Length: 360
Ligand SMILES: [Zn+2]
Image (cartoon, rainbow, N blue to C red):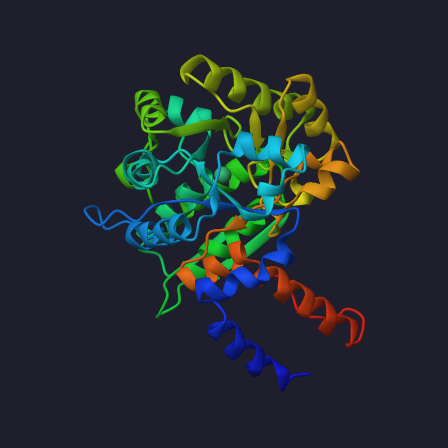
């Protein structure tokens, strides 16, 4: 089985040519691709993110190959109606509401007349909030300390700066750990981190971490972007109290509805793995009249799931937008689906629990 893997890789490389990928469309019956993007690379500012030029290349290819570039709300309708266009449908979403999404992404998508939905963290746009993982990054990039000892809930963490990557691995570790404690513990731990690292946290996000404004939202709507709610402060909803969970969903929708001209009634879970939200959030979304919700588990949106369960439209998965065009084509063409089937076959032939991990 191991010997087959290099062969599969070569085959996949050869088969990503657009003309050939059309042959794989039968694997996509009832399945649509929804991508999620985060920051856009800003060459002037030198901030990292998705390369706008590469995104242009992908959108151009999708247009040339006649994929259905569809808005998220319309895609939900197609899914509910088992519309045949679903299997060629590609929807783009961008999370959080950073200023680069307003300035850069809106122009790229507009140039290809491609709909895209930005999910905004409304407290971020209202200010002075800045996003909690950005505060962790800011602290760890600026600290002069070579070791850090931080209390997180009941755990004491001992971190050491790495000569090659600095605190990059620590940043990942600490951020992930923060998703598994209560909101209060997380906020306390970030303040402790700033104190131990001897870094002053500005009250408002510095320009590299800044949100778009509500005026930007309306300007982007003119260019064809749409906007959906993504909570007020971006907590892991499973870690919030009943009251906070309700407020995060309800108030973000109300703020967005007050500021945007045509808000999209689809919620985006902040931290959208299936264990990070649950029936409590679903009940609030239904009461609020939302038509659905997207998460961040790595899979195709499946119209048959909509048929099977009325709750499926409140847990629609999305693929993280990959950095290279070949990988992006694998999702939309159905090659990723084929790989999924290969992986399942491999897993069946191995010991239980030894199967390959899902994801590219
Ligand atoms: Zn987010």
